[in-house]
Image (cartoon, rainbow, N blue to C red; front, side, top):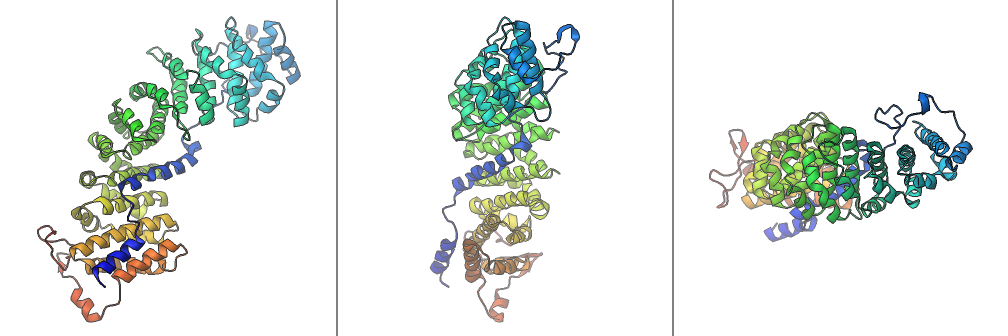
Length: 522
C-alpha cells in the first residue's frame, strides 16, 4: 500500500482536527458529569433545624416552653397588632418549619405567612421578631424552587440585604443563611441576590472578629454566588470576592476551606480570563498545598480548582506545575478514594494536552507509573481519564516521550485492554491513541515492530472484535487500523520483518535521520 494511500485512510478515520484546544475543552463534558453528582459534593441549600443554638437570641419567656398552636392560631397571632402575639406566632411557625422531617412548608405558605414574615424583617426595633421571621423564611427558602420563589416574590431579598448591617449578630447571620438558600436555587435567583449589592454587604462582614459559625455561612453564601452557569454570574461582581477567597485559603477550618475551594472551582470552570483573575490573587500555591491535606472535603474542591486551571493556557498550566502540583497529583492518583483518583487523572490528562515541556514535566515526575496502575486497577471512570492522559501524550508529545510510554512504562497492555470497555467514548480515545502510535511508528520505520507489540499485548484480537461493534465510528476506526497495518503477509516476509531482540527490547527495523542516536525500540 502506498504512503499516500495509507495516510489518506488514516485521515479518513482519525479525527485529525482534534488538537490541543479541543482536548482541553473536554472540561465542559467532564464538569457537566460532575455537576450531576453535586449532592455528593456540597449542599446548596441548608435548613436551620438547630433548637439548641447557644448564641441564639431566642429565649422563651421565663424559660418556659410555649403552648402548642394550630396553624390557624399561628396565622391569627402573626396578624395581630400585639407585639408579643406576633412574636409567639412567628416563633411557633418557625418551629414547625424547623422540624427535621416533613416540615409543612406548603401549608404555611398557603396560609400566607411569607409576606407577614417579610414585613417583620423591617422591625428593627424588635430584633427577636426579625430573627424568628428570618429563620422561618430561611427554612422556606431551603425547599423546592417553587417554595424559594415565594420568598423572592414577597420582596425578601432586599430586606435580607439590609439585615446584613444589623447590629445584632444573629440577625445578620440568619440573613446570610437565607440569602445562601436563595442564591443556591439557581442562576436566576443567584443574580437577584447579586443585583441587590450582596457582595458589598458580605465583604463588610468579614474581619478578624467574625465568629467561626458566621464565617462559615458567609463563605457558603459566597460559593453559591459564584456557582451556576448559563449564564455565569456577572464577573465584575464576583471578581471583588477573589482576593478575600484567596486569603480564606489560609484559614484553618475545614468547612471554610471546603466552601472557599468550591467557590474558586466555580470561577475557574469558565473562560481563561477568569482563571487568570484567580491566579493573579496568588491562590494557586495554596490550592496546590491543600491537595496534601488529610480531609477529602477540602481535597475534592481544591483538586477541582487545580484541574480547571490546567485547562487554561499553557502559561496558566505552568503556574500549577511551578507550585509543585505534579508531585501532589502523583500522590492523589494512589488515593483509595476513586473519585479523587478520577479527578487527578483528569487533571493530568489536561496537562498532557499541553506542550511538550509540560508533558516532559509529567514524565519526570514519574506520573505515568501511577497512570499505568490506574489503567490496570482503577475504576472505570478513572481508567477513562487515564486513557485520555495517554492519548493526549501521543497527540502532543515528542517521539522520545511517546516511546517512553511504550518502553519505560509498558502502557500498551492496560491501554489496549480498554478496547473491551462498554463505553464507546473510551474505546474511541484508545483507538485515537493507537492511531497516533502507528503514525509515529510509520514515520520512524517501526510499523511492523509496533504491530507485533500490539499483537503480543492482545490488542489485535480486541481490534478484530471491534469490527463488529454497533458503533459505526468504532468499527470503521478498528477496520482502518487492521486493514492498514495488519494486512496478510507471508510467513517468510513476516519472519524477515521480525525485529531483532536487543536486551529484552524490540528495536525498530529502520533507522532514520530523525531517530535519536542508537535508534528507538518499542
